[in-house]
Length: 402
Ligand SMILES: Cc1ncc(COP(=O)(O)O)c(C=O)c1O
Image 1: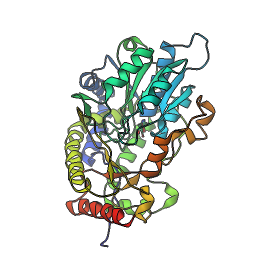
Image 2 (image 1 turned 30 degrees about the horizontal axis):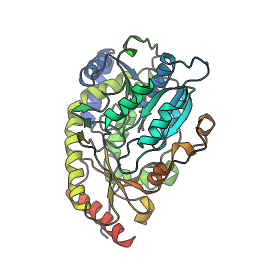
Image 3 (image 1 turned 60 degrees about the horizontal axis):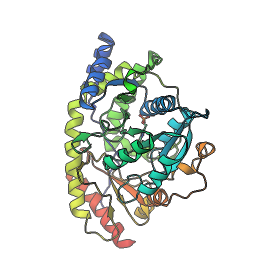
């Protein structure tokens, strides 16, 4: 096999010029970027109010706390929130940070959407104030049935659109449909400020006050350094070295303890505003690359493509496919070209979350299957045409050897 490069699994377009321009802007006019980003999000994501936070996980923590305050259990006690069994570990961390009790529901491996009976059970579980729905890898979820179930039960629907950049359902952006919605501007989210998040509030939450601490001044400097590092790692010749050091844990999903919510750094907001047009162009490239893969993979034995619901336009942050033996079937570690496993286990198996779970007596077969079999293919624009063909070739060989 010819030499295979190592790519980041996702790419958020931030040029050195953008980083430099954003740094100058955030020094010269401290508030302008945050105000500009909030206004943009209010318009494009149909929000009444926007709270910019230090990360998507912090925004989700505020959402869970806010929902718990709005629908406080008359019996008192901690807020109760329903979470998907298969999602990013930061979702679990946000619930722990909010001091919530957690009810788990299962995920359908064919669509990555909530498994309907399991979702219904979780939402109907006594005392649940809110349910979090996390569309993954930019694959939209059929939203109306979930809204109906949540509304009938009087439960607040929190849309975690951290991975939803560029995706739509029924013409609306992911991030514009929840009672409360959450965005992430983390470094791998397509539209990035290196670190940061947003809580989007809609009535009756629009009037709620959130007093957040400002980040320390060094946060801007640390973001600038991280931005330049991220720019460098977008080059496979540079990424190869750190990616091959297992102790750095690149490409692994790890637990992070919750952090107290605070405001987004000025530089993060400036980066997000200035990279907006490039991020929008990148969505188109991701869709084209996903279409290129799908055309060639659809008919292969053993490759199961995640289904997009009618009315959905994916943003394909990565292209999720189910393969018989998951990432281990590639037989090389780490897998090259930005091919990555998804999440290694259901969040119900995280020791840090387990003491907070209410329905521990259940199994989550959809989530277990996804943690064993789901693999994501890189869709970003840094891949050359030759590298896209190499991705297809690797999956083809995998199919014939399993
Ligand atoms: C589905 C999902 N929700 C929430 C988050 C948290 O976002 P952040 O990394 O900005 O804290 C992430 C990030 O990885 C995510 O993938």
